[in-house]
Image (cartoon, rainbow, N blue to C red; front, side, top):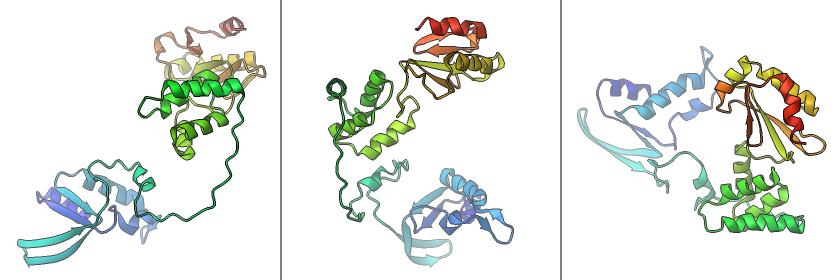
Length: 271
């Protein structure tokens, strides 16, 4: 990589041929390098990034040099590029191709018994209604999860399994998406979500004291729900109302210019 960069910076067009799927080689697997004990990735990463972005460096990964003919300054190189079955120019490294790989060998495992879904009749009807509402949409998984989350304020395990079954999406993928967004919860949450802003503006103007007041009033800590399932408490980094700091919300209601004395009055109004 360093040789490629030296030539590229001198104005030469460089073809960097690598037989593995990515540049970096064994060095990317090391912790320290001898004899200096330098961090291998600290040395390697800047060169990988520069090679990837340099206009004069074209990477030919998963390729091998088969022959070289001619003499220095006038030669031809034959390079064999191995089949990838993906377009490297469009690859984002998401890993989805691994799930559909035509040559991947999977070890056979006995299928686990499918546990029956435990649904109350009205809950099943509600989940089915959300599924039917988005049945015609392409990529309906996220809207369906949003609909169920809006209905129950969390994602019941039976509902998640039902979504996986109805949309024919692997349960692991449903869980991977659901756990990525913090708007989803796998624990029951209260009817009302109280979110206290601890962003810079709110924190400077007493956001931490507002949070303490809310915790005292509800007798819960951040991430907990009151025993009557009425309130759940969360903190956020910004609510976009910095001019009204300190700020908190109760569901979609926004309260700004808060003081500790206002907290009890605001929360009591929802009881």
